[in-house]
Image (tube, rainbow, N blue to C red; front, side):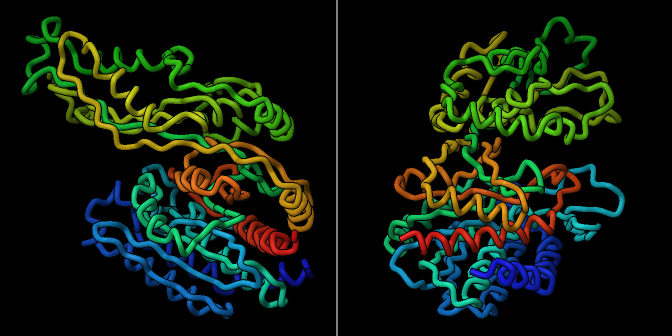
Length: 469
């Protein structure tokens, strides 16, 4: 395998074709169904499907067959089948849907406004993870250009990952016989702790969440009349959240949301923490005076990978400051996002969360919790020697540094689903979301050199997968 030729092929394709396509992709506000219930009427998803399909079918990849799959009432799915030189199968994954706009973009930047500044392509969705299909096909095309054999490759690009992948199981069931039993799964929807080496994700957290609603009045009333008589709905929300979280430390309290952290993952956290140091928390745009929850890098890694954490990501019932009259509001609603340890059952955790919020409501208020997320996490299987060697060589060749391993705090339901369905498969979960890339937030960007290098690494792993036998 001529690594220089692989790199030249990949970089040329990125510069001449992939980056222009990703630029147009950023312009399309293809929000995930959870954030755009009218996605069918708006037609943005169909625009992305057409662009992705057209680009894929133009690639000089032998035997490539692309199908746009559609199930009634569900988002579409791209399924690409590329025959190989063996009956074994490599399954590759990405998604095409996006998070919503978010406020706070810097001047000259925006979610649907592609901008290249230096090595960064700004805009929503390119790194998370519209680039995935392009990288997968570029890697396979680079191998075929050198006549390097590979196993059969199947590429799945879904359209509701940012909503919890609720449509994906139906497609995987439909594709069951065609997929068979892949011996290698590659997912490019994860992150990297730096742009200096290949980072392999060893675990992903699960997710439980939903909307907590507290109602105390049928309509707003004068606060001077009701204050001290009627319980304030915001205070009751605070009481309920204290059942879940220690507000002084951020620790999640119920034992049901915790697991025993494997010793191997603790050791990996120590190693990764030693390599990253204070960059683990200095990378965040903290306001002056705000401190991270710890200055111990290993503990911070475990906090964001193997311990539960609560975020309040939205609220209703609170008027803007400019419109806030002296009125006791009838209700307060808060959207909860509870990240779960990788081996914590997402369904059971969601049931526990609902029970915790709804039981014995303070002051007899009307309290309801409607769950809308229930995803289990994933802990990677033991790394096969051939894959460990391949990853190390790939990182050394294309990044110039050793491969690194670390868990991630996000959730990719696909990995847990495939891990349960194919327990004997090896997994490579990686991505390009590194420091300051700010997935889901303002000023999200794709680090272009990392995208190219990860593509090269994928090519090497696919080639070594075939050669291992």
